[in-house]
Image (cartoon, rainbow over all chains, first blue to last red):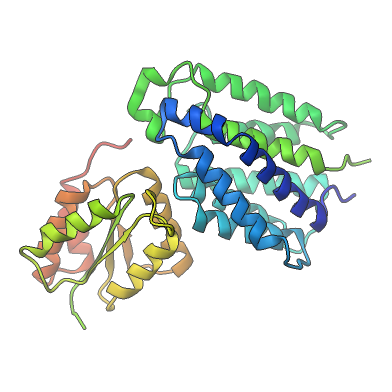
Amino acid sequence: MTILTVAQTKQWMEEINKRMKEHKEQLTELDQAIGDGDHGINMARGFSEVINKIADTEYDTVADVLKSAAMTLTAKVGGASGPLYGTAFLKMSMALQNKDVNQQNFQAAMEAALEGIKMRGKAEFGEKTMYDVWYQVTAFLKSEKVEDWQEMMEVCQATLEDTREMVATKGRASYLNERSIGHIDPGSMSSFYIFEALVAVLEVEE
Amino acid sequence: MSDKVGMVIISHSVKIANGVTDLIGQVITDVPIEVAAGTDDEEIGTSVEKIMNAIKKVDHGNGVVLFYDLGSSKMNAEMAIEFLGKSDVKIADHVPLVEGSYIAAVEANMGKSLDEVITALEKLQLPGM
């Protein structure tokens, strides 16, 4: 059963855009604490460009929408989140090429995205990065047939809280060493909003 | 046209990139060097498109070395290489921007090959972050 259509994918991007705008200040504050302070601005700009690009374009497949989003994010976001989110959506798009998005295919696409983030960011689980959230969401999708997408948000929330107590070893936050403890990772926070937006549009497979 | 290895200086800041090329330009003038710095809106950051365009400009068939300043500029450098699908474009990995690009310019000026330039940079490598 299809859990994500072309229209819903566009809606997903709109829901992300809405959240990035709403939480721009919060993401910036999180990034000011342990990074270079541009995450909110970068994400808001990136997704508003994504909407500009996809809003009036006709797409045949979910893969095409995701590819458009990936190229735009890569080009328009200045910081590390551009190539990282760009790679994630590009790998998802490639995995969903000529495929209907049922839960199984979506899970495979998430695994491809996860591999992409790992490759691009040279990340491992538990390093206080967005990879942690994507890792746990992918693990959740693998675990069983999902009855309620809200469960995925519980996984995201718990992972987010876990990043607070970690020492960052990747990205700009790694220069702070132990001083990064006590702060939620901004990339994990923006990933949380991306999945929250997804849950708002995803269907439950019957 | 040049018979020398090309170079691209990738930085989050246009000022840093221009400063580095100024420094090199004092002694080396015949190595193809381009700057790819700042975002498309000229803010602090890097742009895949700028990096791709710079690579095309300095690529005269002898290979290109890319220098970067901080983490995300390296990711964008990797994406630019993947989009262009070129095997003779290499990233000076974990090499300090100022010292690395200066040494590479001197080596390239002597007519060294891409591999020789990369080897010369190995001794400068920073510990991984």
